[in-house]
Image 1 (spheres, rainbow, N blue to C red):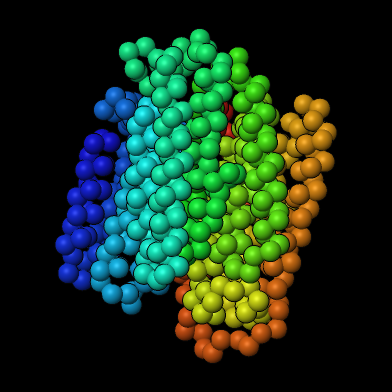
Image 2: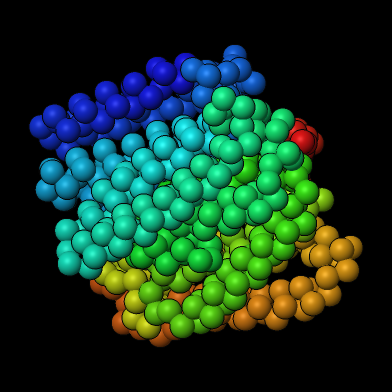
Length: 466
């Protein structure tokens, strides 16, 4: 099944390259995303827990994030066709091929059961994302593309060094997660510590957390906004899944306490970076990209705390994917309406697009982790674990930093909705279907904040049971 999926993805990408019109590219794209949704249903109904090609397993962790990918990428594809319809054919083709290959590569990462295979497909996401970043064909997009490729490749190289160090404890070079779980506790503690640092630093360029968070910010800034929604969710989730699988391994080793400390440190620094730059940036795409850094910093803190906070971390990433993608889909429309993403040039949105304004209000409240946001549930669980662990210093630091984050988000939201500016002429740029698609994703996250269905809770608990 996995073979068929990857072959179809490559085949459709090749056919897109040969397409003679925008309509043919769009048709091939809808074929792929239709098959992707069919693939998701087939996995859920017939292939749960099965192994494919020895390197992929359809486990609960991969299924959760593949489901999110299927929904988010389909909305991104539709919105891309709306806003990029006037582009020349060649850039239009390259963009859709890159988006398709990014989704296929991320899918392979989600289901990979082998450390080396995960590494290979993470590098593939780098190449696919580069095609999205360079879509504008400008000097700034070229600079962002080269920066992204260079820094991500350097990060992935560091992760590879970590993989090599972990290979010293394997039997016959078997780098499957199952084989590593059986022998990792016997590894040299120094090698294990160095390996984890290399892997964390390497994966941080995908997770958009400290220390290599800057490439993710630049990627979101330079890429078309529908692609930014995918980068901030689908690609970030690929980094999270990869890190969580490694975290599972180290949870069984004598160096787990040290690993937890490293995660807490990186998490706090990431939240600090988000708190500082959310106040300083004057560009909505950068603004919400730094929000990703802040949220994933909280996720790292959850992993570092362990216990119930690991459940909270998985739930937080899932809810963040829905909220952030919905926000970026609405930000794309804001940029289309006002012709700019500059914060100081945009305002009075409540009079331009009332549903879009409500959607941004609900999305920002969700990012603030205020009830009824699903992020409120996950952050509350993390704070409970902080208190239970007796880390009052961490509690104080998180409260102070999150107060700065809340101020920045609330201040920018009020400027967006009510700041007096010259309103754009006409309402032709407002696309109601685009607005509704973003609103529904955010609303879904709110519903999860009000009630957490038992099947979903049990599903996440099966993910963190090791």
